Length: 217
Image (cartoon, rainbow, N blue to C red):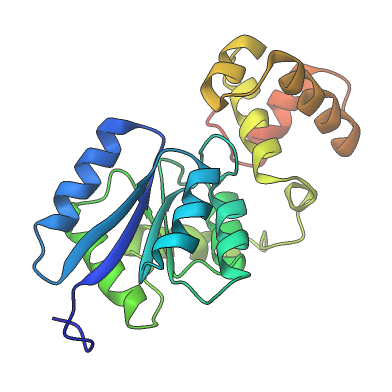
């Protein structure tokens, strides 16, 4: 049990109900933790964080409305709430963005349940939790001299997500459905990417994504 002699109060946020249910089961199996709120999108996560005042928040980095980093920024503007980022992405850019934004930990959805539990306890104690596989990715990037300062740093998280999806061959409609935005908004992101990166077409975007390890070639 934690120092307050009360269970660690956890907010969970993920737009996939199956994932959210799984996270809740993992947390509720621990006697020193309890789930006090569940959010299905970024706007709801911000509202519940303010209303319920959790001890730790576990946020999916890719959500409708506000993405995980936007939620992190919103709720940390109110108070120093420890946040764990949970994601399917292992690309360095996502990791750096999350940690630079103030996340206390970053774990992937492929991680063992024990990692989530350890991450929550570690964040609650005011310490960062970086699993070995994520630490290795960060070490490799730093060794290559590709720490912050790359062209990707001019892009928002959503722009990076759209860039990655385009490079993987997704259509504008598929991307729109995936991120719960309009097809017109996707095209706006695509045009903005071309302008920011000084590229001409989708083929150039795909090559750029490969060169910067957003997708495998």
